[in-house]
Amino acid sequence: MTRETTSFVYVTYILSTPEKVFEAITKPDVARRYWGHENVSDWKVGSKWEHIRVNDERTVELTGKIIEVNPPTRLVISWANASQAADSASHSRVTFEIVEYDEMVRLTVTHVDLIAGSGMANGVSKGWPTVLSSLKSFIETGKGLDIFAKPKAA
Image (tube, rainbow, N blue to C red):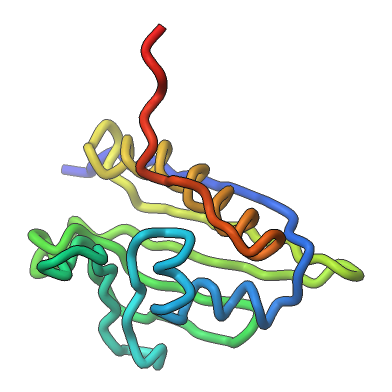
């Protein structure tokens, strides 16, 4: 039986260099400042990566493998909840493409192979816009957004 999948694409332009954007995605101490998580890996093809919440327990929330890496313009990773890491059928795939445009870059994040209607697909559709807006703010102003903020009650 074939499962129905969905995808998510987000494009933003950032006043920065490809090197700084790539570093913001791959350096744990930088990612922590706009994402509240660290992306931890040696960033070599085939290596594991972990998305670790910066809290007292340092909880691994997401994990996957490095599929492709070409600094500072391209990174492709598999993506799964830590609890589903052993189930390769539950893994989706994220591609970060960074293209230089004069004094800015176009960052395109493409997240594919998400199980349609799943909690992961729902989380991704809400999460990526917040995280990538925070990344842009952080790089351009030095301050990320509160990505854990909730809408105010009406």
